[in-house]
Length: 352
Image (cartoon, rainbow, N blue to C red; front, side):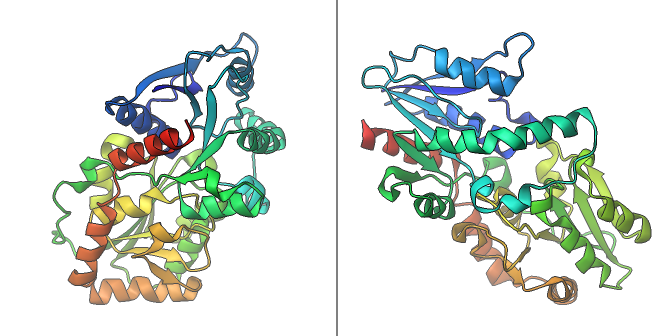
């Protein structure tokens, strides 16, 4: 079986901190390890004076993929490969926020070059992305939630293969030590500051606690930092901004926490949850957030910010039950990139 994976230049490099990029990196490497698959990584360079996104869409249309059995677009960027012979086209659906949670896409974008690019992207990409997905012969969805959302939008459920993301082996080595020299209880967050991530709920909940021995550690790209979060950080010296969390430091960053908070309103998957649990951390989420059931299984669910504050105080005062920690760690570590690749191959074979 010959497979072509499509992407922009450099998009199969996992070091930029993007979950989709990490998926693309792992998909290529784990498919290449499958004996039944010959996989090529096709990276489209941008045309002169044309952005990477439009260049990708155009090059995917102009390319000749007739020698491949499967052409797979593992990114969100719209692709429209021309049909040739028996070649099948598939896409990975990471989430459907642009179709089911459009209100969460309204970011408070600054009038900068990056902000203007984001506005342009949000204005035309969602519609094109949906047309790209619906033109696929079959789809790969990263969670049951995404599969069910596709079905609700009219895509045949039988044509969707669920392939959960994986947890890197580096998160499965040993376990963080619970003893530390100081007695500070550190609550951590790793991710974006975008609106749907709802980081302000974690900040507000933490602000309702009064224990001077508690810290809230926030890791994310500063350019998306919400003004309310920045103001809260200035008011409460217990809140610390750690900046961007590079891939090579993720394990040590998680191991510096005593609990993990992830109050997202919508996730296609929610990989940081499983990574934190793999390191033995209790994970607190927002009960009403749309997070796939296979990921939220061992999370502590807060009904609102006041409830979240009480949960954080209880974790500091009473700790995390060893029995629940063991169950959570074992479950999170059962997710693997190898398993993801095997399920993807099953999808290929099913439709060939």
